[in-house]
Amino acid sequence: MVPIMADLQLTDDVPPVADDGVWLACIECGETFAPFDAIRYTCDDCDGLLEVRYDDLPTFDEFEGSGVWRYNAALPFEEGVTLPEGDTPLHEMPRLKDDIGVDALRVKHEGMNPTGSFKDRGMTVGVRVAQEVGVDRLACASTGNTSAALAAYGARGGMETLVLLPAGKVAAGKIAQASLHRARILEVDGNFDQCLDIVQDLAARGEAYLLNSLNPFRLEGQKTIGLEIMEEFYADNGEYPDRIVLPVGNAGNTAALYKCFRELVKAGAITEDQVPKLTGVQAEGAAPMVEAIENGYEDTRRWEDVETRATAIRIGNPVNAPKALPGIRETGGTAVAVSDEEITAAQRDIAGEGVGVEPASAASIAGLRKLRREGEVDSDESVVCLTTGHLLKDPEAAAEAGNEPEPVANSTEAVLDLIEEPSSVTDTVRRQVSKATDAPLVPALVAGGLGVAYLYRKFLSKK
Image (cartoon, rainbow, N blue to C red; front, side, top):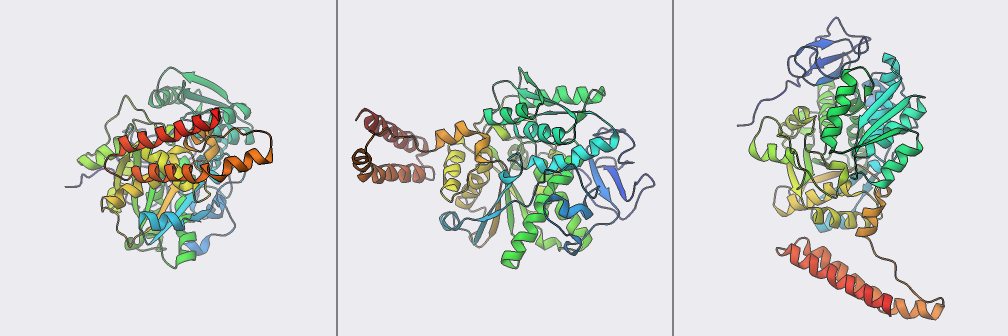
């Protein structure tokens, strides 16, 4: 029996607290609040999560312009603090589509936002709300991308920014962004979830305005991912995708996409049977959402110890699980955990189509491949995979996953001698490693293939 969780039913009743048709509603007890009269992140009465609600939900015909603010009819403001963001590409993946074995495959590359991740969509709305409620210090806990986005949008809005990061656990590229945008960076001796505990405490004391995805306005910007996917996919294919596969960390995107689809159904823009199946992917070392789905839990259980090379989803306590779990269940989706080796193989696969993403992003392709192999995804399905961050967010991981430079003498003849044979051998090794990730004896084959590649490269360097 599927557990009953939060009440996410949209209502026609507009409460007296609504401000220009916008209000906040608790998904647990149903209490409603004015959107901007006070700073709040959760319900005053029961501490449940809040959702932004509207009295007038638009259809696709009401959108105009480009980027996130094309969808201002579905957002709290006409325009936010913008760089601008959104309008990211929906890439075709012809070779991957055939290799995985689905009817259609597209990749929504959120790494093409201004700071290189989907977080910009949430910040353009969230920082605008911060201005509306009159705060001057913004704060977040982060695995990297949130800090980069918040620092950039805080700078754009002329506001002080404070970010808490788990020491030694954030990719250098992301720290560099936050640093350059003049955020104050505090490295905490703990993991992301412990950083978030501290930031929530600071927010509760009135020391800063919290802009993690616990903030309901963050998710309003992120739901525009779903609006773009639906519009773009329909324009190209004459139908909506059957399934959207996405990496899951704090589960904000899963919650935001489900809200997007609920609003579209309520507005009459799509029917319930046109809602894509939401399918979440986590790393095996940080998979509380997968655990909840597989065991039918009403909520996630906090994982105190999490580890994965996909740093952006190294989260053990997804705060948006009460919104996201119903989204997966009610759309007929599922959740799956993949190994770090499968994530790296998928990162290479996507790069083979010319698209560069950070490891956490590649989890969506790794998860789709695994679900297709297990028969959970059918061959006739049309699928959109969400990739959440750019390749250069984690250049060290990219370098480890890619080809190593080969030393060569300073002459054309030396270059010609080197390129005559090795490329074919290297390609053969790479193909064998790629096949190994789908074979039963994965660890041995991967280790063997990588070992051969390593020894071969050492031989070349000595030669």
